[in-house]
Image (cartoon, rainbow, N blue to C red; front, side, top):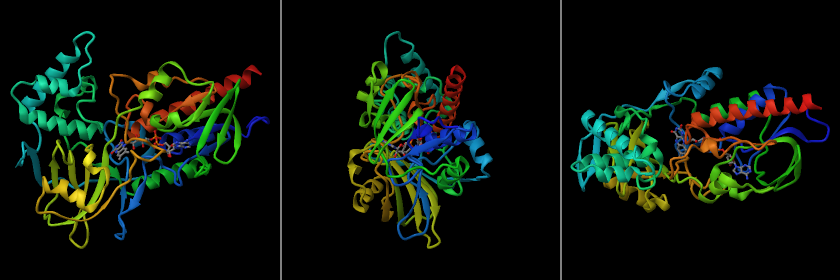
Length: 415
Ligand SMILES: Cc1cc2nc3c(=O)[nH]c(=O)nc-3n(C[C@H](O)[C@H](O)[C@H](O)COP(=O)(O)OP(=O)(O)OC[C@H]3O[C@@H](n4cnc5c(N)ncnc54)[C@H](O)[C@@H]3O)c2cc1C
């Protein structure tokens, strides 16, 4: 149905989950779609890779989903017959607080309620925008809770509590505050299987290794310049990470909130590390906020008895993920554990991501600044209502496809 004047009805920029869901839905509506992807593989911040030499595939980016709270991704898995598996329940807990190790596994319900009350009081003050750290500083007696919530915020938001607005946790039920083990369900066949299913269903192979350099809006038609060519479309969907919007020259240029977000971006900068090691008999979960892995847990045990752990940290110490650097952090909580190998992907330094999952320094709803400017539309987990999640990517991609189809239908009927 592509109009004779354009190469495709819609050009989708970015083959992450949001772009692929949009491409699939647009194809299903009879639109011709071209997907342009900068990197050499589709999937964006969801992709699996082999632990070197071990034949085991692990998720380098997005992994866990909340089965009961994330209906859009759950529906996608059902649609393609993809099953979940679960990280093993930890049998041993380690919590590092003031240099000492304890077996604390979570804050008590009364501490969670105390924190929930403090958050709701702090954010209710007109004109104030307290951070999580501000709220923690106001908790007079409870240093242990402060330490725990620092780790939890690092892990959940991928940013330190000094940066995260307390309002983010305003509507979170008290029992979730500090709860570390809600993330367990993940795709048995890895997210590779979902990405492959979406591409097959869309019937559109993403053009890999073809970064978009410029978007030129010319009335009701858009010209897109890539590293290789110029293509035209009746609509374009920008489905790249917010932190990379600045890399694409848009004409006419963005203004208002879009310009602001290009300048500030999001602040999610967690590093996820896979660790293969010896010396652990049982599944473990460790929490260490200040200088270590805010969250570290056993993911599986290999046939040779070694453990595979996954750790998250916002610490600069891990700018280089080496066996030696990781051993130093692991020693803080599991000194008997010998690190044999590590594996990680640096989303923070990659020009195609410039950050991990989205987190914002202000209490904003990113959907507000990502309002469509037809024929230019936006999608992505970074700008979804539930930003920073796989669910957000799916919801946002599906919504954008609906909006684009509606826009094109209106234009066709106006002709
Ligand atoms: C380490 C890590 C762990 C995570 N863990 C979880 C988790 O457990 N659960 C969860 O729900 N979420 C998790 N997330 C978040 C989740 O993975 C992301 O929110 C989601 O995958 C983002 O999808 P997206 O389509 O919006 O963007 P992306 O997946 O980032 O896709 C954008 C695509 O655009 C491409 N691109 C960039 N610039 C250009 C350009 N100029 N031209 C063309 N293409 C371009 C990129 O290469 C990329 O493929 C995690 C993220 C990270 C990084």
